[in-house]
Image (cartoon, rainbow, N blue to C red):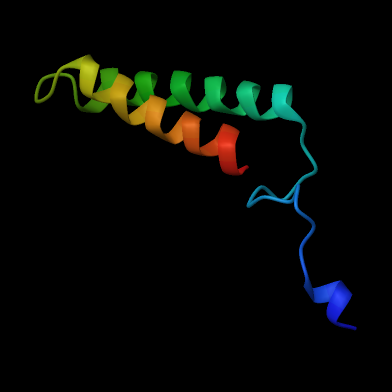
Length: 66
């Protein structure tokens, strides 16, 4: 019973089973999405470098913990 509640070491927060390549791909898709949204809505207020830093932090988190 307790074994069912315990997560395996390779499980992350993503709802699907992924390998390293899958997580990197998801990180790149997130990076592209954030940049497109940033260019549409935030570019007049903040430079694109801020979006890059945010994307890299989120991508790193997805690759390491996803």
